[in-house]
Image (cartoon, rainbow, N blue to C red; front, side, top):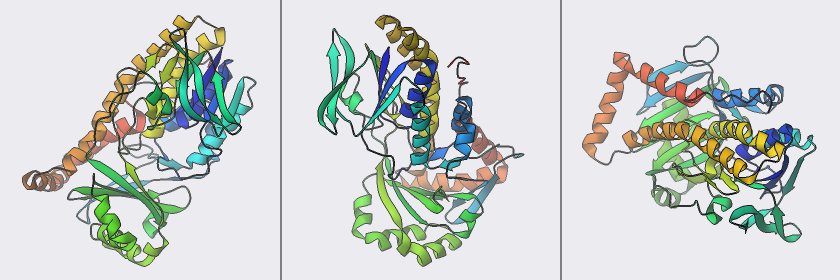
Length: 406
């Protein structure tokens, strides 16, 4: 049987590799002609690293451009609240790796391309689904040579938060609105970034996260109230960088002042964080951000996608490789959804907590949050709370193990 996987992001590329390795035929469709474009979601938590290790790709992962965070510092109003050590021997264990996503995707596709049942078609834009006898039987779209139709026994949509597969399926629904957006940009790496330090700056109605990116620059994610970017944009780059500098520590503010003219890759991310309750219909499964777009909080997008791919390979690999009946393949897809949805729900609930606290609408509630944070630090409760959340973000909330035969 042949699966059509739409979208060569982490979920799609990893799943295509695993299905082809199991012996199923796989056609991977990707809208772009290459992966040489800017990605924001490059944080690979230990749970995502473990997924790649289970796939037997540890050495290939280590060879990719990447950076590691060994220490995280949390500031409130430019004052250091708490510093947390990460890595071997620390109570929290390993911290995130920030891995070049273009390099990661090219590696996964290269590994899959060495398998006989795999093929990739780049530059294919999905316009609709092909339906036959009440089932999804392929996709219709535009290829480099013109209109095209790609047929298969089962279609898997892994084409991200703007999923065309989801849009044209009967599973789509309105998404839950969020209260914030993220303004991403990069600057030259400051001294603290060179030391493997990541930072979080908590402020009134916003927060900022900075970390060393795999390209040797400093990645900045400024989380702002939804709808406020228009005012920032009217001030120009110098204006909004200057406003950001007012809310960070003195050393980082000085770095912004000195190197702000070297800003690159500014981008506004419209944050979405919700999930479909139903991911499947006859002949179709949605995975990754297509079924559950993740918030950037906690760097979960790649990690959840890779864990989705492992579970999907466990259930779909055997039936596709064996040429099972359509009803059996659909039942396997439902088992994927049943196994993955509990973790997605839990992680998304955790992702929504910090914005709810930091984007309180009343002055009293914001004041309470500002007073509470130092008290939690002095009492020793804050490290415990952070450790509880970090372990779930880092390693997931359920056990995900790749079938040894996959």
